[in-house]
Length: 412
Image (cartoon, rainbow, N blue to C red; front, top):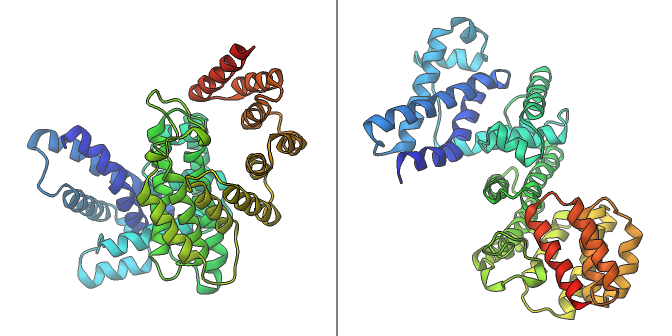
C-alpha cells in the first residue's frame, strides 16, 4: 500500500481513536484541541512519509507523534494545564509526565464513553449522528454534509451548537451509572440505528460513503456487545439486523451501478459469512423477556436472507411487520409491510392497503404502487413510476424507474 492510499485508510481507522482519547484527557469542553492535534499528526505523517518513506509500524508512529504533540501542547500552555481536570494535574505531579493511554482496551472503552457523551439527551438526534460521524468515524465536514443531503455550512453550525451544548451541560466522557445506563443505551442505539440507515437507504450515489456509514455503525455496535456493561439482548438484535442488511450490499446494484430490487437480486452475491454472524447475534438476542423493534426488524432481516420465495417466508415477514407496527408505528414500516402483504396475499389486496397510507411525496410509495399495479393496470403503474422518478434524487433509481416505464410502454 503506497503513501497516498495508506494515510487516508489510517485516517479513517485511527483519527477517531486518537481524538477520543485526547478529548477524554483534556475534557470534552476542549474537543477542538483534541481534533487539532489528531489532524496535525496526520498532516505531519503526510509530509514526513512522502520524504522519508512509510515507517515499519505506521500506526505506532501515529500514536507516538500524537502523544508527543499532546505533551508539548500541555507544556506550552500552562494556563490550559491549570484548568484541566484534577486527575490530570495529579497525574502530572506524581509522574512528572502526562500519561496518554493508547492501549487497545482504553481505545475501545473511550470510544464507547464518547458515544454515550455524544448521545446526551440535550442534543438533537441529527447533531448526535453528525458528531458520531465526525468524532467517532473520522468523517470530514463535506462527507457529513453529503450524508445529510445538505451543505457544509449547515453541518459546521450544527456541530458547533452541539459542542457548545456539551460544554454547557458539562457532559463527562464516561459510562453512565448502572441505574442510568439502560436509559442512555436506548439513545445510543437509536443513534447507531439511524447512522446505519443513513448509509443503507442513502439516496446519494456515492456508494463508498454509504458503505462506510454502515460499517462504522456496525463497528460501534460491535463494541457495545463486547463490553459487559452494554452487552444487552437488544444490542445484539441491532447488530444482527445490521449484519443481515449488509449481507446483501453487493447484490443491491448491478455492474453499471444501477439499483437492483430485492426480488431481482442475484442471491449468489449475498454474503454468507455476514448472514451467519447475523444468525449468531439473533440467537444471542433471544435471551431475556424484552421484545424490541430491533428484535422484530432483525427477524424480518433474517427471513429476507432465505433465498426460497415461499408462502411461509412472506407470512412470517408479514406477521413480524404487524407486531413491529404495534410496538412503534412508522410510515416506512407500514409501506414495507404492504410489499410483504402483496407476496403473501396478492397485489390486489396490497394495493388497497398501500393507497390508505397516502405517502404521496415519497418516491418509494410510488415505486411500490408502480410494481403492484404492473400487469393489473399498466397505465396507473406507468404514472406511479413517472412520479417516483420525479421525486427521487438518485440517478440510479431514476434509471431503474425509466427502465420500468419503457418496459410497460413496450407492452402497449
